[in-house]
Every structure is written in C-alpha cells, then in structure tokens.
Image 1: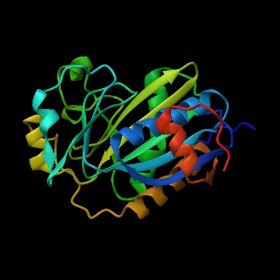
Image 2 (image 1 turned 30 degrees about the vertical axis):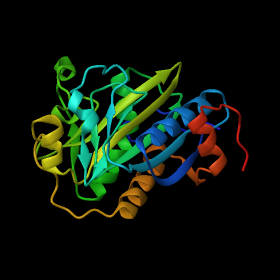
Image 3 (image 1 turned 135 degrees about the horizontal axis):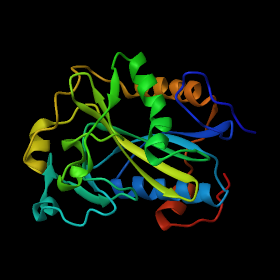
Image 4 (image 1 turned 90 degrees about the horizontal axis):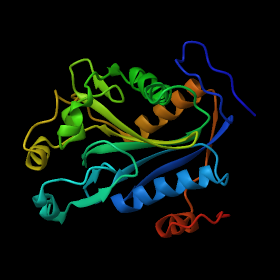
Length: 258
C-alpha cells in the first residue's frame, strides 16, 4: 500500500503506510550504532518495514563520521563524571558529535525521490513540525563544504541541519544510502554541558540552547504525532526484542521472530 503526499507537507513521499516505532532505548554508542546498522540492513533485505526510533547514549560518547579518521588523540582518555567517554564510529558521514544531554532520532526508509538535500528535507519535515508545536521554530543551516575542516558537527550548520531563531544548532543530521534505501539519524541538542563541549572541542557550540526543561516522553510523543501527520502513516509500536538486539550486536541478518 502506498501513501499520497499530504498538502503543504513539503514531502514527495511514496511509502508503505505502516511503519514500525521502537520505543526509547538507552544504551552505549556501540550498541546504538549496531542497532541502526542492523535495522537498515533488515529493511534493505525486506525483513523490516520503514522504522522510526529515538534513543539516548549511556555512557556519554563521541560519535565520529564514517570518513572522519583524524581526531585529537586526547579524546581516547576523556572522562565525564568519572566514567570514560566512548568513541564510536557512525555508519553515516559528517563530523564528530558529543552525545551528552541529547536525544537521537533515527529513520530507516526507502522510496524517497529527489536529491540528497531534498530527501533530508522530506524526512526533517516531521522534526520542524513537531518542534514548532513545542514552541521552537527551526530553519535549515546554510554552511557550505567548509564544515569538513571542523572537528565538531555542531560547529557549523549545513542545509541538512536545523537551527533555532537565535542561531543555535539544535539538530544535526546525517545519512547513509544504499540503492533507494536511506538511514538518517541525528542528534537533538537538548541540554549540552558547555564546559564538557569546550573541553572536547576547544570552543563553544553555536548560539545558546533554548532555556527550557525538556521531558523526553513529551518530546517523543509530539514527534511521533508529527511523523504520522507529515508522512500520513500509521506507527505500529514494537519494542526491540532481546533476540533482535543480540542479532544487531552480532551483525546477523537472519529474520528475528518474537
């Protein structure tokens, strides 16, 4: 079953009507990246529908872009609140992201048409809509290719990123594509510790974060509703099972049944 585009949604989606929604998972960066890769491969092989999920990182981590092979050596000895900061590589591009006080979203989908920039905007439409309903107006960044000279993803805002009216980079996104399938995930910078950020990147993030106390349940519920409205889909809640998580961590592509 395919879905029509909704008026004024800014979307050219022609997708399955039912998507899977995986409730919030807190885990290490290595586990989260393994799950993202596994869900993407499951989707490519026809074993999984389009999927939306949100997650947090524990312990604090720095994720490196897939092609980011140079980074400060001292990152390997960093600690936060007495615990080592994990270094993990994303399957997507871009620069390093400090995952502390953020919420990460992930979308796996196929069937989008248009350029890479257009597919970013098609997927990000639900983020713009959802945050607007939470009182945060977002627009796309305008930085060019110069961002690759920066160590931090949040030191510049490209056309794939979402920025507040005050200039704060609120959501940084990255993609991995194979054929017509897309894995897109991104960090929503809710409450970055400025001292830790400066320790890692020797600079402060662009602008100032919105002075709000965030509640993850409210954010996720709002963004779920926005995704359903923007993409005209049903979200079928299905937690990640223990067997699926084990398969993800071992890179298995064998279909997992509950």
